[in-house]
Length: 203
Image (cartoon, rainbow, N blue to C red; front, side):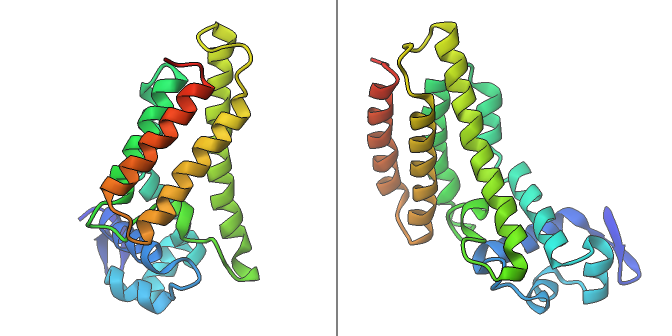
């Protein structure tokens, strides 16, 4: 097995991070105890602290694991789409599939796992907020680049489009967590795209 040492042997880091990710995803950061984590991960408490330093350290590692795996659709879209209209269309529609997988708690870990936290965990919530805001900033920058290149109208409000897209994607995550079906969210994505396409001057 590969990974880090614990309980006298090496445990599979990918496996235990997947277990931790789903546990945080299901119960939220504050709602997940160390006892629940160790039970789900199949390791003891000293091993958890030896490997990750703290519950917070484990959570941040689980978030990175999520972003490199089940939540990686967004990063891939940014990397693979040259123009912002195609990027936005892809983000909206791939979010539907990512957020409604039947083998996960639903929605997005980054969006839903720390919306309300204790004062002691505020830095965790701040970290996730910064990740979400960074994606909106990144999308705005891509739209502005298209405006500068002349592939979008000069009067396009890049920030408004980026904010609107972010609000729709985050809203779809919450709806998926509440049980909205993929079919229902595809309708949301399609309706949102029609509005955004008009804002971008796309025909």
